[in-house]
Length: 506
Image (cartoon, rainbow, N blue to C red; front, side, top):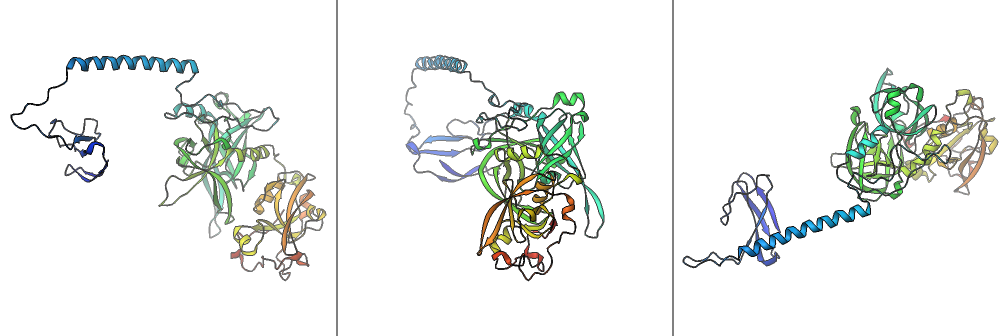
């Protein structure tokens, strides 16, 4: 092959030729105004497609006075052409007969995983449907079927300026309908889309809106479930919306098509198409509120993910939701790197969140501790497990009655990984006082942290009254005996060493 560049201004091609070219043929590039000496026809053609022309290097022009070689009999050429046409017609007919017999259809995707249905036979849990993705090309049919399940989310919140002034801000995100009960519609989105929102507005496919209420949050998984009352929806809206079909992200293959739908930049729903670039990517995701980081395992795609796409659906070619668009890599040197939460990982968390009750303050459960986050940087600096360091324990709280001590590090609650103090709040405060939970703590014994499970019956908010915030100077020791620790890593003097300074009673 030839390698080089075409110069449009000079109508010339510069470069090198591959000496291994078959039959020692030359590749010459012909510009818009150039003409070949052999045919006199202009190149390129009317469709603006530049073409390569092959010229035999060993072929000579006939000398003057010598006759050219006779052409082959034109009648034989006609027979060949007719035979070729007949063969093509017969082959095409056979091809379509085979397709008809096998039941294959030319469409945007297979019929596996119908949009609008979720298997709810296992009680209140949502179930993912299985099926590999197939199909490519025009995705408009897939989008038409999926769009009724996609929603736009607008949240308003109050923030404080550096000078202490408060003002209202508005943000945009996306979500999709995951379940419909008798009295409520459940919608999945990202935690960072709705966290701290004063009010949430959900916009459906027909541009009608309804108020959304947070059903449950999980900051570590960056997931949230919203509830919309069915009674708040118009009859026309009820007829147009559908429940999304959930796919197994474990079945996803690198290189298969991915379709992202979401409320990009808050302008309304838009569609981008790409491919699954990688699976099981370990991504450090920062929290701008706590200044801590969290490692997430995500799908990577080159389908464009923009602000406002967060919480939206990443679909396969069957129209199944295989991921929840969450973050993108933003840098001037980087292009086409976006990430989505795998659906297989998200389903059990969604089931937990959507079954949570909206509790009054007096109904919420409490552990009776104050604590602070042990993030990645502190973990590496002091050799501590990632989790929540117990700074203080209430004398009449649930934690003390269960045997949790100051200096312990909470790593799990009910088998859900704990990485921030906010997660302790989310897990505990969404359960009623009197509920028994399993708390996994890591306790230092002989200089080594070892995990153990503790059964805790949650107390009421009264059990955290006058709870010590853990800031007292205890000489770097915890519980008066240090529990075998070398020193308390939280001297509370240098807050810059922490992954977000917060001591919160829960």
